[in-house]
Amino acid sequence: SAVISQKPSRDICQRGTSLTIQCQVDSQVTMMFWYRQQPGQSLTLIATANQGSEATYESGFVIDKFPISRPNLTFSTLTVSNMSPEDSSIYLCSVDNGATEAFFGQGTRLTVV
Amino acid sequence: GENVEQHPSTLSVQEGDSAVIKCTYSDSASNYFPWYKQELGKRPQLIIDIRSNVGEKKDQRIAVTLNKTAKHFSLHITETQPEDSAVYFCAASRGGATNKLIFGTGTLLAVQP
Image 1 (cartoon, each protein chain N blue to C red):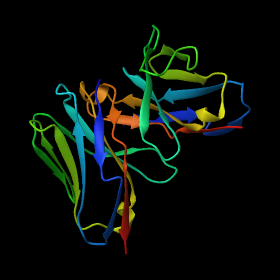
Image 2 (image 1 turned 30 degrees about the horizontal axis):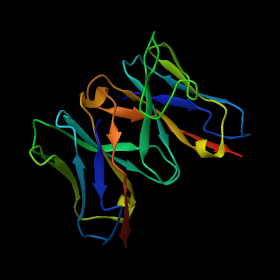
Image 3 (image 1 turned 180 degrees about the vertical axis):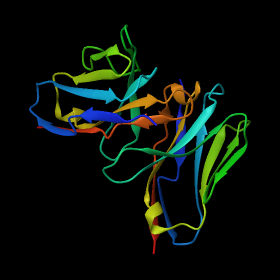
């Protein structure tokens, strides 16, 4: 199984600022995804982080708000830009193990005040 | 795009009873259907999954059934225990575990001792 380290685990941020979340995997993985889980809600896919090219965003999410980097096959970052209280959520990265299962990081609990 | 509906949103059962959670999906090209358990404050954990070439899969007290014609799949938990209490999410994917997951809205299962 893939071991995922996600940082920070939680943060409280001022509105208007930006936060960058890191996702580090202990092995090379093909696919990395970023999800958002709003309080008491399900998981919503933000984007697929593509290695060496621009991320693929889902409807309702844009690069200016959620820029994503994926410099190699073990690391990705998600930035939440110009934050507002509505961005308060848990952000999770997810990777596959090559064939059979998708794993999640422990999540970043973001509170915007 | 894919849409996954999940019912019920909350489910309360007595310890030892069975619990059934149902999901329907819209994309006939979906071929991978995992179920995740999320305890409070923790990451989602895969508990069972099924692929479109199989109608049923069982793992001890947990089973999943899939009806491709009707585009619905269900999670069955028998002999429920208090530690089964959590939020359960179904999901669907086109490309197996290596592709993006579209999640259902979640079911809060409470097992009463």
